[in-house]
Length: 167
Image (cartoon, rainbow, N blue to C red):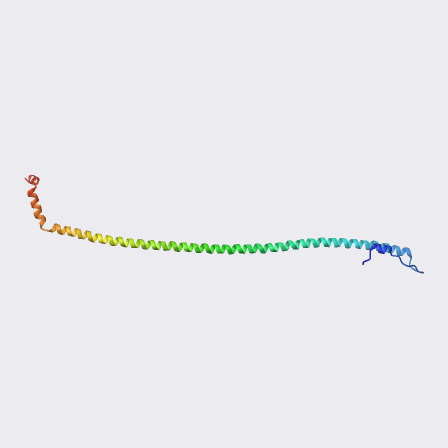
């Protein structure tokens, strides 16, 4: 156990012949007591300061650890957001490609359908023209037959109004 100022103060030395001067020894011991008490006080103050600094150091270490964890969590969250955004963008692109393919396929189908309709209309028009031509040619052939001339002369004879207009 360390020596205390009280131990120094209460220390008694045995007396001998030709010993030290008692007053000088007492003065010296008083000086040692004062210095020792001062050192003890300083030591306590330094220990208190050291404890306070240690508490602050621990506090800042905790803050540093918390900030490190926060940064890691934030970085992980940013990575997750970035990955989710990439996935969402890929899904949007795939959906857009599907829609584009659907639109192109629909357009091609409509184009084919319209093309088929146009071809069908061309065929029908050609058939109509051929039938109409046949009908017109048949009518012309009818008009070219000899029977019209006799019909024309027999009609004039029978029509009294035409005769009146002639005469």
